[in-house]
Image 1: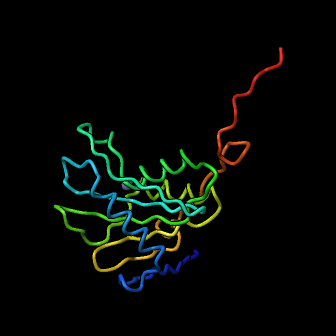
Image 2: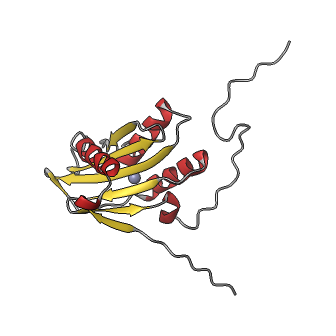
Length: 172
Ligand SMILES: [Zn+2]
C-alpha cells in the first residue's frame, strides 16, 4: 500500500493587498459579470483572462433554455482568448459573481471549467493563476492543477502539440 499526500497552498488577499495588475483583472471580471445572460438563475458570473502579452479577454455566463447549451464564464473567456490569440499563453484568470446586483462570496470553477483550465495549462506549458474574487478579498490559486491534482492527461494525438495543422493535401 502506498499513501500519497499533496500539499495545496492558496493565498487570501484583501483588496488593499492585491497587486495592481490583479486588481485590474478582478475589476474586469466584475464588469464582465454584469454583462452575463442569466435569465434563469440571475447568477451572473464574469471571468477575465490575462495573456502573456498583457492583453485581457473577458467572458460571462451564457444561459440557454436548453440548459446544457449554455456555457460558464470561464470557458467563454478561455475559448475566446484561444480563438483570438491561439499562441499567446493565458497566465491568470479572475472569476467573480454577482447576484441581484451585488458581488457574492468567492466562487470556484465547475468541473468542466477545471478540465478546460488544466488543458490550457498543458497546452501552453505554464501555470494559470486563478483569482477567486469577492467583495472583501481574493483567493489566489497558483495553478489550475491545484483544482484537480489527480489529473494525468493522455498524450495528445497531434503532430504539433495540440494546435490544428493545415489540412494535408495528397500529391497526384
Ligand atoms: Zn464552469
